[in-house]
Amino acid sequence: MLPTVLLGCILAMQASPANAITIVSVAPGSPGSPALSSSQFLMENWTSTVAFTDVTISAFVYSENGADTAATAYLTTQAGAGATSASLVAQANVTLPAGAVGTTPELQLFSGLTLPPGTYYLILGTTDSSNTEGWLNGDLPAAAVTATGVTFNGPAFSNGGGPVATAYPPATTFSGSYGAGLAFDVTGEPLASGGAVGLILPQIVDGGAWQTTLVITNTNTTPANAALQFFQTTDAAGDTVPWTLPTVEAISLSDIQLAADATIIVHTPGTASTLTQGFGELVADGGVVAYAIFTQRVSGRPNQDGTAPAAAPGSYFLVPFDNSAPGFATSIAIVNTSEAPETLSANLLLASGQTLSGSLPSIPALGHAAFALTTQFPLSAGQQGTLELFYPAQIDSTPAGGAHPQVAVISRPTFSVIALRFNPTGAFTALPVYLISTTLF
Image (tube, rainbow, N blue to C red; front, top):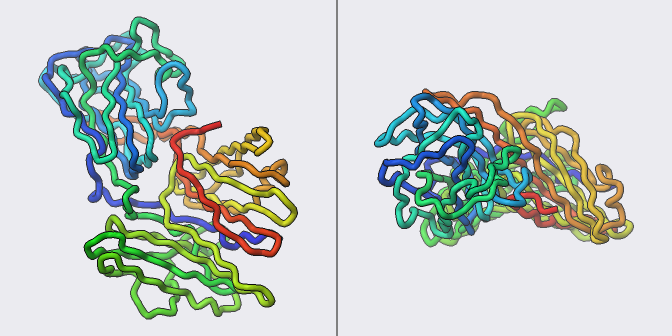
């Protein structure tokens, strides 16, 4: 039987907004014009070499036609000819408040996003012929404010003499000839450079021949604080409750004080006859990282170890797999970190070049699914390749509130994934999983 005991569930990450920084910001310039007419769109874009979480995107925008105006905002990883809905990161139907030259209302477009490194396009406009909208950015500043590792690429006007792609406006042909752009603000928490706030240890196990070692390291040159909290699923309904994890070392994991460059290592006992399993959340100063080592002890063979780092959820992941020979097998666990049931889409690219597509059974809110890859995709037996996982578009019709509520259409909920590869001797290793910004095949 293929071991899947290590593949478990992950609690939703709640990142602290207090750690947010400006990713890219363009302040309103001279407040005269420009106004976009009906069926026109404006685009801004930036490139980041840094991953960010808890991202919020706002725009300084108003309607110039004397009444509130419906518009649509898109965040994509591709724009212009050839762009498809597969590049959509988030979409929002928004209400532009009635305004006038000299006013600068700020409208939140998106929140709670996780953005891997990549190029992003913010597009806003309307295809309603009865409406127009204005932008409070008459003269675009010479340079935007950007975080380290982020480059602002500038604005572009929509149709450049051609029609708007009404079926999917981000596919419109954009030109760079427009003299002004949208004033907007993007904030979030960096995940690169050691940022580890609200990261997840995907699985903790103890007993039944299993033991877990936790390693927490401060990569800063100054002291740092950290806290680990643990959870476990208690019944078939998937209820999650706090878990007091037993450890050999007599230290409090809820209040860890780390000296500069320091590491602490703690072990679960591993002596119980029955298995207990759960998962952990690391809340720490930036620069604190952690990972778990799973040890399996079976009589008559050497102990086997596998490692899983603390990680953040995302919307798209690539997972290499190896089911290439008898006794070699890859197991996957997927955790839905949203608060609603979700159905995950999957593509497999086999080494032969063949592509398989499908979907997995619905995963409960804050729940998980664990399986051998061959049980969900029998044609992957005897094969090597790459698994691509992503959520299809989801619509949240709950108004955001305020004087001018929006209806968010967040196209990709987030999830977390872990993969283990077993060989014929029973030895196993964790496979790397790669956070990406869009589907690749």
